[in-house]
Length: 222
Image (cartoon, rainbow, N blue to C red; front, side, top):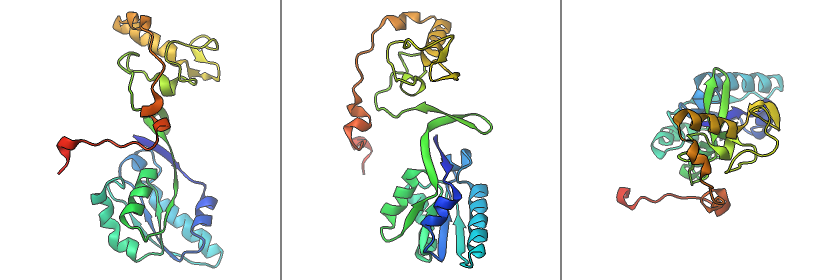
């Protein structure tokens, strides 16, 4: 899932300072799961903005809507009437959601209310951890399903650095050394031989270094 967190309220208030009627658009999928833009968060943000604006003597009208997702045309289309009736949109989705609305409604002013942070998973209630760097060239088959790109602080591909100590990363004693995790996992699986295979320097052209990425499935096109 895409993980993010709401921007500071003052930053949001500054973005919408010139507007008198806005739509707060949440997202019922990733943003809802990471408690950044679901029903509850949209409602709380709307109330907070109204109180702040009333205190300034500049009341604001706010509409609320939470489509299932903001990252697909069919779901943002349901926002059409509300967007056209408002001065601006405050999106509580990830950056993809913001840009989907921008592309679908080119005349709309759209602001991000969430800082999109990483691809991760909820470890426990209130804790989300990065798990994937979307590098475009997955090596999880070599590393026991543990990603060295994001879980190793240095993104090392062939074992730990000299700073690893007692299974912890040198940047923080609370952070597990990714290569210790990989070793333990491969040992459990009886696949320690995987470590003898030297992974070549990574081709970063499949990641962000290669510029904006696109997948085209000719067999799926209409």
